[in-house]
Every structure is written in C-alpha cells, then in structure tokens.
Amino acid sequence: MSEGTELGRFLRARRGRIRPQDVGLPAGTGIRRTPGLRREELAAVAGVSVGYLTRLERGIETRPSPAVVTALGEALRLSPEAMNRLHELVALASGQMPAPSPGPTRTVRDSVLNLLENLRPSPSYAVSRANDLLAANRPGLRLFPGITDWPRERRNVTRYLFLHPMARRLYRDWEKMAAHSAAHLRATAGADPDVPELAQLVGELVVKSPEFARLWERYDVQARGGGQKHFQHPEVGSMRLDYEVLAISRTDGQRLVTYQATPGTPDHDAMLLLDMASPRESELPHEV
Image (tube, rainbow, N blue to C red; front, top):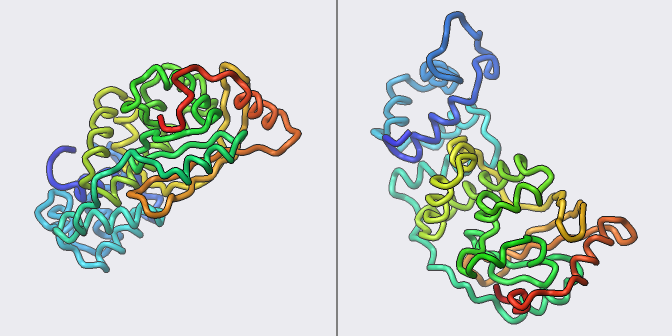
C-alpha cells in the first residue's frame, strides 16, 4: 500500500471493500487472491479501461476527468463525504490543491472561554482542527478521566481515544467510536492534507495503535457532526449524552463540542455530578 499516490491507495482500499454482487456482477468461481472487486471488474462498472485504472492506482495517471472521477466514485458506492475526499485526492495528485492554510494557534478567544463557562453544567470544550484539547469547562475536562496526567501539549481527544488506558472503559461502544474517529480524521486530513500537526498525529497513532492503523487503511470518510455517546464514567457512572460540534468563526479550524441531556433524567443527574465534583489543581484553568 506504500507505492503510488494517496489517490491510488484510496482507490485500491475502497475497491477491496466492494463485492462483485454489490455492483451487479456475478461472484464467479475459484479463489480470489485479494478481497473485493478485481481491477477489471471495477473498470467495467465505471466504464474505463483496465489500463487506465491501473495507471491511476499506481500513480502514473494523476489527472482523471471529473466524469471519470464521478464514475469511479459511483462504482465504488462512495458516500457523499468519501466522494468529496476522492475529488480532493485527485486535486492533490494533479497539483491543484490550494495553498496550505496557516499554522494553528492554541489560543482560544476570551468570548469562547466565557461561553464554555456559561454552558455549565453541560460538558463543553474547544478543540483544534487536529483535535487538540485547547480549552474546557470543568465538566468538559473531567469528561476525560486521566487526560490531565498528560502534558498540556499532548491532550488530544483522538490520541486519548486510541492511546489512553482509560478510554476503552470510558466509552461503552469504543469500537464504534474508534471507527467514527478515524473516519472524521480522514475527512479533516482531506481538507488540510499538508498540515503538520495532522500528519504527526496520524503518524503517531499508526505506529502506536494497531486498531487505528487498521481503520486508517479502510479510507472511510465521515464529516464531523452531532450524535450521541454513551459513557461509563468512573466518578459518576453511566451517561448517555447528546452532543453537537460547532465551528468557531474566525479561527483556523477550531470547533466547540458540547454535550447535553434531558433535565430530570439519570443522564442529566450524572452530568450535574460531573460538574459538581471538586476539581484538581491542574483542572482549574479554562485553557488546557
């Protein structure tokens, strides 16, 4: 998977996940050397030559037409997010990507810090485009038990999910969370392919987490958004919280994440307890 371009690796990875019957082809007989569609099968469904698809996957051809890109994406049954990622990779391979965005800042505006405080008791925090934890209110920081044991510069919610020993016990559906997190990071990397902090985070996780390495090679892409997470917190017990992810304007990709629960429910009571717990000294500042 190391040869060629990122575009070629994406095409090979996604081709390996499609069965012939998924695209209306007979399964055939005999043993397949590789999972998924054969190259000639994808070429036939997409309406391109096998030679052209081979050159794309090997990084020899880097300027497919928009019609070819769309045909390949539809043949691979890509989601809208994954289709956008495919177009981004074509632009990257052909040298048409825009100039890299400016380097990140870890500074969070005072107005955002005030907002985090006003959102209590809802656990809330601000993250960078690489998911570095930049600021949090008290329940937001306590939502991640043990994260304050790490130096401030290493406090990253994706790193916590895959590398912190508390994470697998904290998230009741860790496997689902891990898959979504890797897909979200793929989407972010697609929008900012040359951002050093993203490359460094991915490189670290690929080396240190076999689960992340496996998920990263799937080339799933999923846009960030709201949903629900189920926590088994060591201090307050079970919490099933809804969350929203909001872009912070006039920043280089900072986002605000906030959780909530219906008042009067056990989930809301647990959230209140999380806010009422006495903070440790290292948890007192807004910026983390």
